[in-house]
Amino acid sequence: MSIYKIEDIKSKPVLRLPTCIPELDWIYGYTSGVYGLPSGKMSLWAGEKGTGKSRAAIEVCRRVAGHTYNPKDYGQDRKPWKCNVLYFQKEVDMGTLLGWYKQDGSTVPSNFYPSDSATIDEQCQDIMNVKPLLVIVDSINMLREFRSHSDDAIEEAIDKYRKVCEATLCHIIFLQQLNKDGSPKGSSSIAHLLDVEMILKRMCSDGFSMACPQKNRYGKTGISIWWYHTPKKAQTNSDFRLEDKEYCKKTGAKYRDLEAEGKAFQRKMQIEEEREDAIRQAQEEEEYEAYLDSLRTPLQRFIKRTPLGIFSQKDL
Image 1 (cartoon, one colour):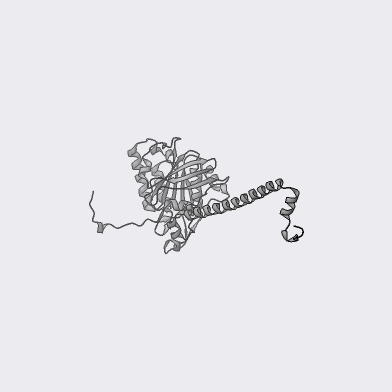
Image 2 (cartoon, rainbow, N blue to C red; image 1 turned 45 degrees about the vertical axis):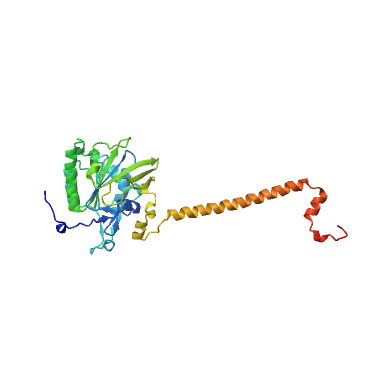
């Protein structure tokens, strides 16, 4: 244990890896001029079985692995590059995983590395060998070390991941299953040891929400985004970031002012109601006049409908 002087401590800027999914980048947060996954950090995606965790994770892999990153966008002096992506999958075989990846019609790029390593030491060694910038662990419940549910063992395991994560500046996303009551399947201590916690909830047959309710060391909490399933993939289906004035200012996106939209909608409804009232009043006056006309004699009707100017004094 040591005591430090403030002037001796050097701050470390948090770098970001954009996923090229604007809503997802927004919910993770902003530093160093960029929205995206905080590099060298770890996050948890927790959701009930069948929610869509794996499909969403694969879509993130497609975007990151398929994107050529321009160093000018990140203030770096280097050549454009593509990121290595490492996907640990123990719930299905590698052929099935690649089938999921290709489901949208895309080919599997050479910088996407699937692995069936089953222990933490094996996975950490894979990370050091591949040096990816994005790692998916699908799922953390399948790892041998996490089956003991021992908090000490889990803390030691997470510490191993953190060391290789910081050494390679990758971002690790752990997928975890929740029970139907919302409790974590296995140990509940995992979320406390990581940097960001995302909760996935199935809202309908083809959609789910991803919320950051209370833990994001490098971004905002209490915000959420929506995903929906298509026959080929999962994709985001919300523009909540456009309601964030700070995000729009930093990215140049058009700000969606909900208060102004609400007032404009109310005014539109008021005008529509006034128009309908005018039409209804005209109809009522017309119906009343028709009723009065039905009570008049033929002569009264004739006089009512004939301009007085056509009669001479003699006629009257």
